[in-house]
Length: 318
Ligand code: SF4
Ligand code: ZN
Image 1: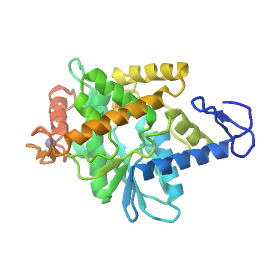
Image 2: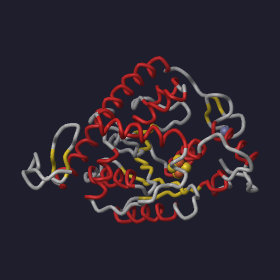
Image 3: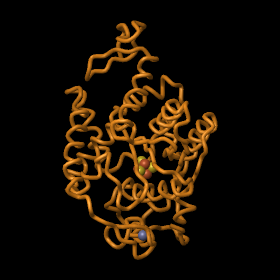
Image 4: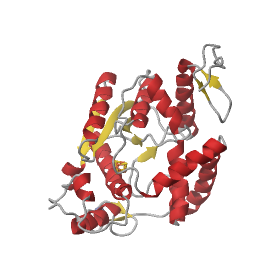
């Protein structure tokens, strides 16, 4: 934050970008976020005229900001927005986020599709994570598999052509490092924003991928978007949380480092994805959805949860 003049309008600056030295007032800062999002969308040809665009809206600051920004740049109704919300079933946490999502969706007059783990899989996230025995997987790795399928399911119900998620620059940099630390070099190719997922026919795009998480939080704040301030109780487990802290520390010491990491990850991803093209998928032997190994990640994870969960789980639909 700084008290100098806005570099664009000479008004009172409220924020200084450490990586570029640019100081901006609240209004010019918000404009800069919208412009950056537009540039990213056009650079990677993310959205096209006439499409139905499913926006994954969890109710957190990133996804609510994404919905607001996309709604703002769609004044000429080039595409149709549909909000997709997943209720994972985390008691005392998720209800508030779902309310924030529903309120903004209503205010903007956007169609809303809501799905829940309970409805799709027969268990809530709380039930799925309550194991009889020790778990050596983080909650987010279990939840992530179900979340992805749930968004896909909501997208199919909504009949959308493309799914936009609010992953930001920090998420990208974290995922890149985590894949390296996990030894998942194959997954680096998935970070290529132009790649199509073999396991799912709809393209996923990330219009905020070139924007720092801190700046999206600031956009939400300056736009007075009410969002959930409490984070998911399972969020601080596992490697991602350590990688997040490490990258924040590096950025504080070397402004712009996360951006450098984003550029490196995109370069590596584009080289790897060009080698990977041509790999097909096969139907999952259990649910029939596309998979790369014969049994999809969701069915594998459901089996694990059923074996270890303390809850009696009812049969699921997907
Ligand atoms: Fe799921 Fe992790 Fe997100 Fe919580 S923080 S909703 S456990 S992915
Ligand atoms: Zn399956």
